[in-house]
Image (cartoon, rainbow, N blue to C red):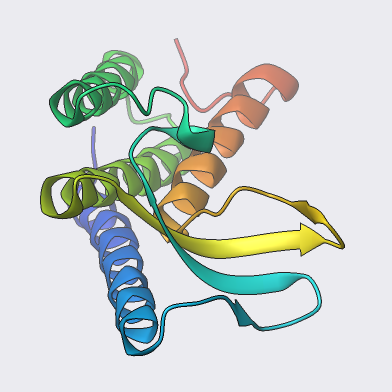
Length: 160
């Protein structure tokens, strides 16, 4: 059984923090566009990613990427609901809530800007990791927790 309040809190916090941080990044770069060096290994930048992770599928239409995101969310939730019962860990719900909040936030970017706003850039000397955002962190963390528990531990999130 889904705990709606717990889902809503994680979902809306993820969505709110991501959209607020993107708003700040857009505002900061509107004043004077450029790279803001924060530390020797971290910059604030502004990129509009028309594709998915690492700009994969950047040639695909915005509509197709939105539909793919919604389909992936529907699949994840159907798996969760199919295996959902009282003995399930709330970790699965929190993870899926974070993934959902991040995915919906990135979908909102695609609708508003035609691409996802990325602004966090880490680097080591001349090696730069592709820029990302808070939604990407939520999606990756949620997916990582699910994979870790499902594949590498005996504490299953989804019990049969």
